[in-house]
Length: 247
Image 1 (cartoon, rainbow, N blue to C red):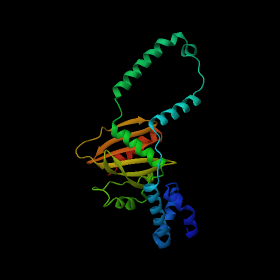
Image 2 (tube, rainbow, N blue to C red):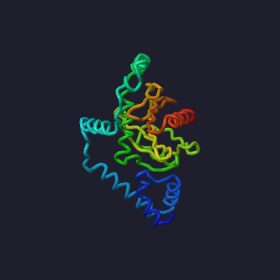
Image 3 (cartoon, rainbow, N blue to C red):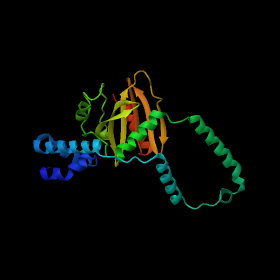
Image 4 (cartoon, helix red, strand yellow):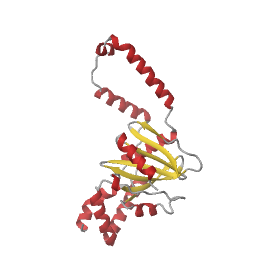
């Protein structure tokens, strides 16, 4: 990769949109090229200044609710009444099933506030193009980046061999404290893994589904973890299992 190639892909790299092969080639070039590395640092400073100083519009909860309602109304297919489509002989079995499902849902309880907050941080990181503060596939680059920025050192695991490459990290906030957010990729989707010291309070170790996102919170070796992603459940459970089994 030469200077012209770097100029073409640098924006995609900083936005976390560069594929793994090109990302590795670019990082190899940056390691030996002071001028390109300086250009990247200038771009990062500009992005940070825009992110910090530019005005933002935050839609009200009412507007979000109305938009979702309109989308549901326009996408919902026309349906026959239930009693016409399934027949009277299925009414009682269906009613019994509904009661059973309602009981299961009632027993599951509400999604904890910190889990909802993690989902909001995940969505926000995708919407405002603030997925990463440091973009790298090298765990030995991402882990030292947090030094001096946090009062702890997050465990950083590379799962590229298993199909979940590390692509970077950033600082985020959960429960009113700064935490590390490690970013992994599964095909074209991203996984946010939030990590911070447990301080003696363990997370429940169970999976939640919130607005189409899978979330799993757990505690291991004195650290709390919350993984959030829209990938399918099988891949999500596989990723979590790999993380929990890592040293």
